[in-house]
Length: 231
Image (cartoon, rainbow, N blue to C red):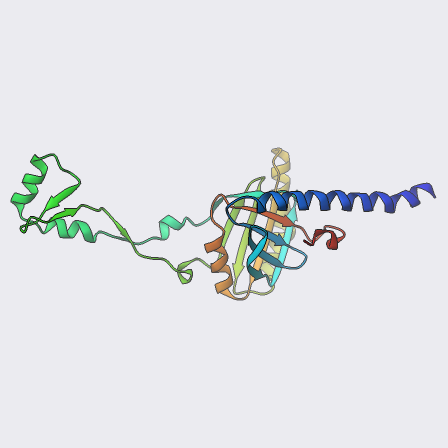
């Protein structure tokens, strides 16, 4: 009887501890100059925040988590499966202008040791820029990608599908457990989070906003007393 009576008290105490940790970490992030993200698995929402204010909100159509439990603390994005720099288109237009100069001007420029500038026939100095970048917009972002966070956490974003299919069921109940077992044998943590978006634009904007080095807090759906994590 004493154990049954103490069990609710211990559960309530655990909720208070988790709430204090959550509020402390959120306060720490809000004091930093940059923005951060809060992923609420139970509500299927992702919040982009700065100074404690919600700037943007994503609604996830479905989300699944497999593997080790997540700590309630800021997690840093290490890298993405697709590098943004590799997606840029380089234009070598400035070099073409310089190459149209007279050969004598090029020789004079090289003899003078000035490798950064060149002069055309009118005597106007031009800067020898190597590359220019085309501006990239949200429509240029990928719709399916992976985010690699600290602690062996991988977030896979899948767009154009509201519910996982048969192939995903095979991954969740066969492939992911094998990866989790292999990580356990190598004394590494393994957590896989899958986010499904029907709207591809939502996935693209999330890729745009979630840059390398940004911090996020992930609240798993298995956490008890969800009201404790409201702010």
